[in-house]
Image (cartoon, rainbow, N blue to C red; front, side):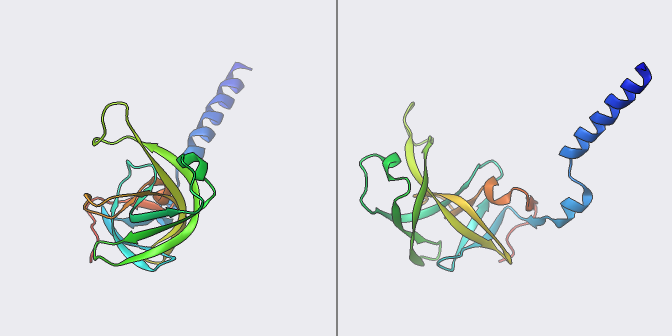
Length: 171
């Protein structure tokens, strides 16, 4: 009896470990992306130089202007409202995007004093890399001081990409 219980336990442990591990076949289906890439915001067709950041939870896009219809004095009160924002790539090309506010997030950055934070809007956008498209939540942000106007986070990469930091955007 003890022997069969022990074998059952070992078999269950192997099943649990295998369930969490990816097969070679699953890894082979993933695309390999470098530390930087050219991504397209699909609704406008604008290309963006992007930094791939596995440490970032979600994507962040540079915006020049934001207009919220029937704006509430508190950002949280604007969730679900129509938003219009001007995006601008590193080449100076810009276009307006119309959508709805999906979420509001609190962000702390090094530029703020201790205990202070910003509230930023998140919207659903479709981003494209080569022939791959994915709809993801994107944080709207002033990235003027950043090298890349678009940051690609784990919400775009998860399940579909492996990142090879030795590989850079060929363009």
